[in-house]
Amino acid sequence: MTSRQPIDEPSLDPELVEVDMHLVPPTQPVTGIVTSNEICLRGKSASFVRHVCVDVSGTPLQGAFHAGQSFGIVPPGLTEHGKPHKVRLYSIASPTVGEDGEGRILSTTCKRLIDEHSPQASSEEATRGLHLGVCSNYVCDLAPGDEIRITGPAGKRFVLPKAPERHDFLFLATGTGIAPFRGMVKDLLEGPDGPCKSDIHLVMGAPYTSDLLYDGFFRETADRHPNFHYHTVISREFLPDGRPQGYIHHYLDREIRLHGDLLTRDRALVYICGLAGMQTGVFQAMAKLGIGGPYLKVHEELAGVAPEDWELADIKRRVRPTHRCMLEVY
Ligand SMILES: Cc1cc2nc3c(=O)[nH]c(=O)nc-3n(C[C@H](O)[C@H](O)[C@H](O)COP(=O)(O)OP(=O)(O)OC[C@H]3O[C@@H](n4cnc5c(N)ncnc54)[C@H](O)[C@@H]3O)c2cc1C
Image (cartoon, rainbow, N blue to C red):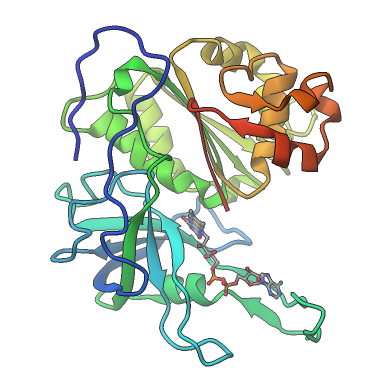
């Protein structure tokens, strides 16, 4: 666990907290004990997402994980080919001190993968059944007291800077991409050194209001801390004037006065987490609004092309986040 550094001079490049990684390798998982497993959606929703807490006491993970990192879960049983299941990664939703304040209990935000089965390879036949994700459904079914095989921690780039007071933050989340931001917001505002005074904006995208995750926590935190701003973008609901709310990048476009001011500050950092592909619209919106410079490295082949004309393949290959833009999509 790290303590904050004093502010001396402004810094553009974030020096990220140093973290431990792979203390428990995927080949040798250790055992944690589930302490709670609760729905964390705002209302009745078509998706199923649970906040799951795991006691890692006595394992190398105790006191050794940071908000923003992930940990691994190895589901029990064998694959259809008779091999042990591979490890799946889950973002840590707890603050660096854990849910218990002593680094013993970490948590995650697990969404059940449920879909109509569709062939994944040309050799596979179509069936009319459901595809139920192996690990996510296993985790969502766990009860307090159950054992779970875990690994990690993983990831060193999607973490907070050592000196958060030197920066302002724009956090962009879709779905379970909110998990690391729950931990980070707690680190920033409820940490042992007192609340960080930086501007912190969290934008959460969801299809319906009922799909918002940890909504009560973020609203209460925004009420208590005037420097923390919680914005929701509900893609299948409408603005008061009847226009659709759209996705996060539409929101950035619409609220450019707010976020333009934030993003043009030398001290601002952008963190993006959630559904694979969400960065596409965000990168395009930032470039289109002329505020992408410090956050995006655009290959010269794209330099003369208007961002709205960038093709998906171009963005994937020729637009990279800089050290001031942290990206975790899956
Ligand atoms: C860094 C990182 C962090 C993550 N954090 C989180 C998190 O915080 N919360 C969370 O919920 N998830 C998170 N994930 C995703 C998580 O690791 C798992 O991928 C997810 O839970 C699904 O795993 P599963 O075992 O349930 O699904 P699996 O059983 O592995 O099923 C998924 C696979 O099934 C196949 N499939 C998908 N749809 C169909 C279909 N309709 N028909 C047939 N086959 C299909 C695909 O090949 C797909 O890869 C994260 C991933 C990464 C990489």
